[in-house]
Image 1 (cartoon, rainbow, N blue to C red):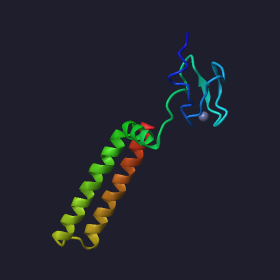
Image 2: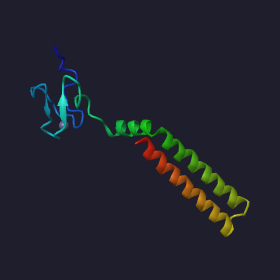
Image 3: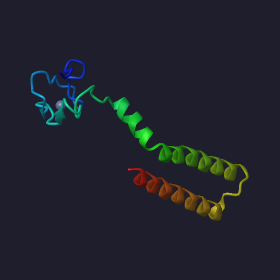
Image 4: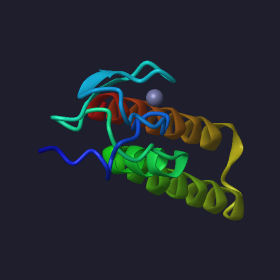
Length: 112
Ligand SMILES: [Zn+2]
């Protein structure tokens, strides 16, 4: 016997699925649900959960974004502090920024 009490809501929108059969489509959002496999059934995913899931999935990209961003910021501050910016300095900095962005995009799509 299946326990339909604990997780008897649509996992996408939270709609009450009681009495709608073992499997079918959520009347509210149309998501497929199946109580036998628990697909589409359970607590609705909150925006906070989505963010956490995204961060878990894209941990490497997030790390590259944060660490790379901080390094670029440190380089910029050092360049300005040492007064070695100039046109050449900023060209090098621009190349570093573009390289960082390319690495970020590549990392993101490799993880997706
Ligand atoms: Zn739904």
